[in-house]
Image (tube, rainbow, N blue to C red; front, side):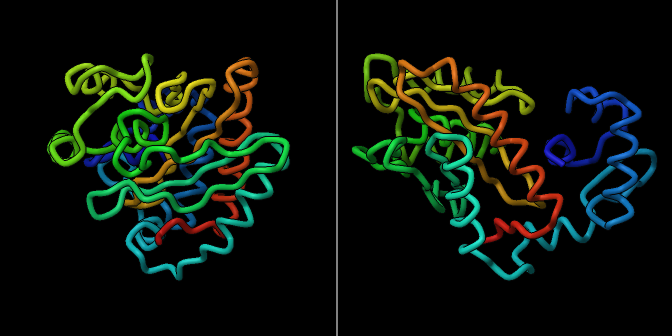
Length: 233
């Protein structure tokens, strides 16, 4: 679904398999299943979002924020790290929910998450999903400014980083928003929604970061396949 979402005019199975890092037979099986369920459609040899996915992303589904909060709380406990969910909506970064535990507290929002998307993994992941015009508009309203000595230094450096991002790889930032903290985010694609989820860890646990975010990706994928989790808020 994430791979399909990057192609406005659709893409063939072989290309989607390559971008998703899946064996071609597995990709064909998933594409057939999603097409049968109405989440994808095939036209002229390429796959695009179907009516079911568009209803989820376009707001036709009933919002269920309680499901999101409960799911994040479960994942924070299972993964052993804070879990964050954010949307890009009406030109702004919107934090939907954060879940943590006493043993693994969330990052303190000492500078507005909405205004400092350039400095944290969630924001970078969301900005990376926008087209150039929307991205430039956002940065006009929320200029790049270093928050720590590790932060991206200027707008051009950030834009270069965003253009180099690959959707199949998590967005990682190390001490760019908060000293002593590392964070990784993944895009969540359902219909036209621009969303992301992330985990954070103390710097001295950095070796856990990528396994933790991959575990989160698996958990989210499982829930999305159940068609219970709606991010159309």
